[in-house]
Length: 137
Image 1 (cartoon, one colour):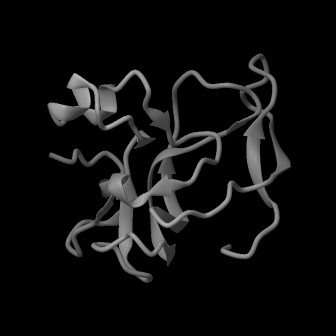
Image 2: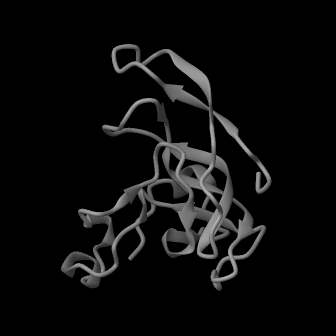
């Protein structure tokens, strides 16, 4: 995936047709030094989003690429990502370790990439489908 100019995903394109997902093409954002690329094996999905919506968040997958600034995650690791992939890290909410409530948070749905701050390793003993709802403390 690291050399893709564009990728395909199943997307909801009409909020009145939830049962009809379409395959659409999207261009990935530029990969940065804090980013982690993951091949997704399992994901959840719900919530209000912009259309077209690439469904899925609270993901589990295998790391295929890490940026130069990522230190605790390696290629080949099985990891999870919660419902957000970014926050401002400077407001009072973020400084209180509640980044998932940041008003400037970036949700995982719609095909965004995740930086290494919001990626966590999945314990070997935990099956991937069960890891989708893990809470990171």
